[in-house]
Length: 489
Image (cartoon, rainbow, N blue to C red; front, side, top):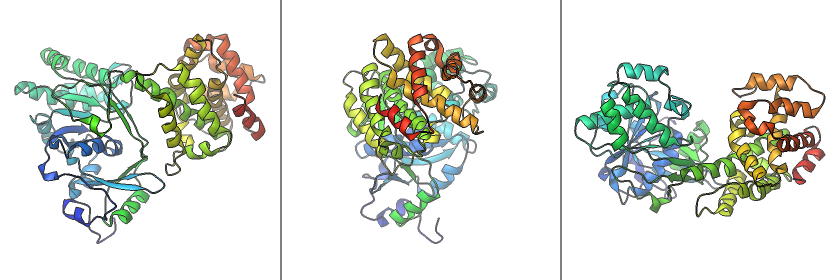
């Protein structure tokens, strides 16, 4: 921060330029009704913004943000009264100050305060963004051997994990005759609410079966789906914020203009009027998850692998490519959408149009090599279900196989160049890539034998032939061959 420059806080809000939006309510009149575990950039750019939008009408939904590990966010935002800037990444960036976060606590340093807030009768909703690893799962169940869970079970009244805190708060409420709160996962994992419920109940059952039964009966764990590209905050963002605000902000956040939040309407103690501010309330979260995986994440991966083979660096650059951009649009409209079971009332064309506009946004620098990581985990959920559905409907899979073949070519290219693969199956993939089979069909067949990736589809002759054909069509050394492969499918 610039030395001597005034800092963003309640007392300096009036100094902001007129073009910077600010809270449209009296912050002092708000009450904390939400505890959020894992107060990182995504929460502050996404869910906190939606809560900021409801506070003018419903002042009871302000946020207590809890960091489960580091004190960095607390130390950055506490002197700012919880205020921070959000930059919406457009050609002409838009700035707003978000005021929904009324306090920030660091759990390792302020455990009593966190537990006290969870037991506060005014708190009705606990939300969390702790990434999948923060759930301490083994498959779909809680990993009772996880070091964090083992430690918390040894002293459940002084937890460290997200699961431990959620259950400790519910235990205090039960002891005090208070109703159970709703726990809303905002992490992108399938059946997030179901996984969280099972983890909390199993954890409680290890030391208090009656508490486990009470949580299972009284607490609510709705499912949700979230979507918005949120690049990490960096010094360049801090400098842009300082210039836009005329004030110093220790930790601004940024995201693309598009944001989606779909929530299952299952709450124990009421909820904000989220429909008014653009949240979709739905009973078919799985349908929205499926739409996102297949219509957003799959094209992302298609651009990552095919774009990297073409020597491109970013998603926006891939969309501007004369052959790849149109291919991605055709892939979505003609080959993915017809093979996806979508939620009732879901407007596929509007969704696809919005996604293509997001992809083309030059203000969001989303690097293809980052999206290309962990392909062995992404390919099965992003492409293979669509391919299996297309085969079952006797539809062509040639276009759908091209991104999968692009992943295989990417693996070959990285391994043969001596570049380490960012993938949990890196050694197995690299071994196949370095075997240097003369016949491309043998290469494809070797990959298809990886059952953890391809499963039963790897034994389907129709898929094998189409994938071999797509693999043979891709030649990164020839721009003409790449162009032809993309335009002919």
